[in-house]
Length: 334
Image 1 (cartoon, rainbow, N blue to C red):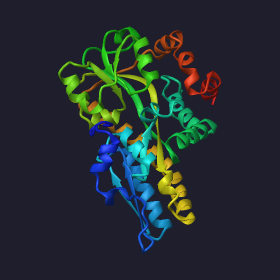
Image 2 (image 1 turned 90 degrees about the vertical axis):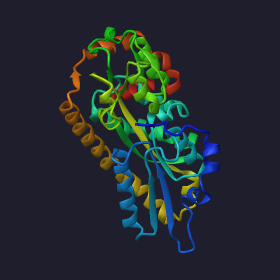
Image 3 (image 1 turned 180 degrees about the vertical axis):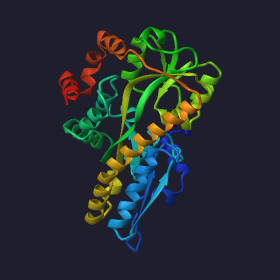
Image 4 (image 1 turned 90 degrees about the horizontal axis):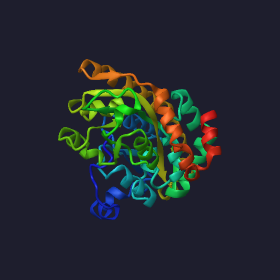
């Protein structure tokens, strides 16, 4: 998804946006409240489904006194900028991926270890269990926000325009764009690739012109962003299950009445299952459509990829930043 369509300092962005836009949760004399939410996907992304569910639940529980306005496509700034605007109280909420959160909340990088999740059920157990709760509290502390729900942002696979990747040696020398996580960059370097954290908005042209050979993304991004036009091979590495936190500004939350606060929390919690199912469904339909377009999908020898990560001691090298090896072991055994 495009997390960098508008790259500019948040302070400048805030100054350029009208004062009316930034009063996201201001209650008028009639007691009505407007909540403004941002995300970096398009209107068809599962983040939009999550926000729509949130808006519907709030409308039902507050008799229409709360209006939710949704700004997709990074209209208010990149993902990182939206997170900062939530922290500053300039907008009410954002869909903050574990990739976008990791530079600010380093503990969240725990979720970005390649191959750490066995399957989707394991992923959800972690998000809905003690680890998810602990990480949510850390996000709340570091970003002065309330985490309303843990969302799902897809299963990521490697794709490129040069050759099929079935074993780690096939990645050697390939210039691959990865998410801005130190752990993911280190992991792809260990696998033999040349990782880049180029802006997502520049990725299409970079692959088209040969500046990069490919990237890693979920099926929906591959389809919606039309990366299938500039790539040929998709390797089903499934190396990363990407989480996203639905965060809500604490500054804005504190301005709400206790009744509205309760309604916001309940509506936010209700989005989890709806958004996750929407993401799962979109991934499946995107995969089917990509196959119809003639994209070549190949299986990989997952054990060989995991062995490289293990031998490079990626987990041990980064344990201190994410809560220690005990935290990593707890996740694995969840």
